[in-house]
Image (cartoon, rainbow, N blue to C red; front, side):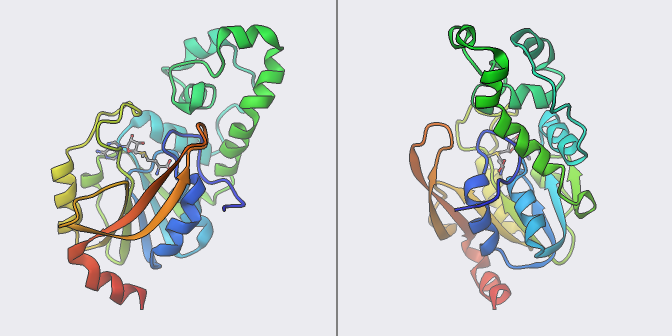
Length: 246
Ligand SMILES: C[S@@+](CC[C@H](N)C(=O)[O-])C[C@H]1O[C@@H](n2cnc3c(N)ncnc32)[C@H](O)[C@@H]1O
């Protein structure tokens, strides 16, 4: 179990298994986190010291702004945002939209109106939001010169020589992200045709094309339910993977 929290509060965060994932991936010069989201894997990759540069990328501009400004320590983490502040700001301020929302999914205030009426807002914020804010501050302590941030589709990122790639795409049919689902056939082709070793987080991938190299029982931080999540590599990269791990 991690002793440190990694990345921002974000739906689908790999915070709880970040260290185990990073342990699986061989070190070299560059690490690419192509579906970066809240940046749990980027954060853990930087702290591991296994790569000279860690490249964070996400297609959603709001998510990238959330991560970049956290890295730069630019969010106002001291203000208590009321329900009306939240609704005024959620479209233009990703920190408010995620940190001050229900289950960090964005769009809905972190607490229902009935519960809000039961206690002062400061107390509720301490109970539900304080730990999230500490995670935002922790991202601000990553050495920013170790991270390169981009806002592209995963297949448009220019991957340098001497790299490894990690991908954590949205699950099939998920409605959790502002950016719609991806074309999975195209994604599978991208992984198989990559000359760079690719590590893929997923519950399932087609077994004729991918092999799992590790399984994790992952607890949902919100619902506390458990599920088995895997890290896969393309079958055609197996020999490359074995060589790089020697
Ligand atoms: C499962 S989340 C990643 C969570 C991340 N690993 C973390 O620990 O916080 C998937 C991310 O993929 C992003 N995304 C969706 N389509 C994308 C694309 N075509 N290229 C890059 N990122 C994309 C979403 O915006 C979302 O942030």
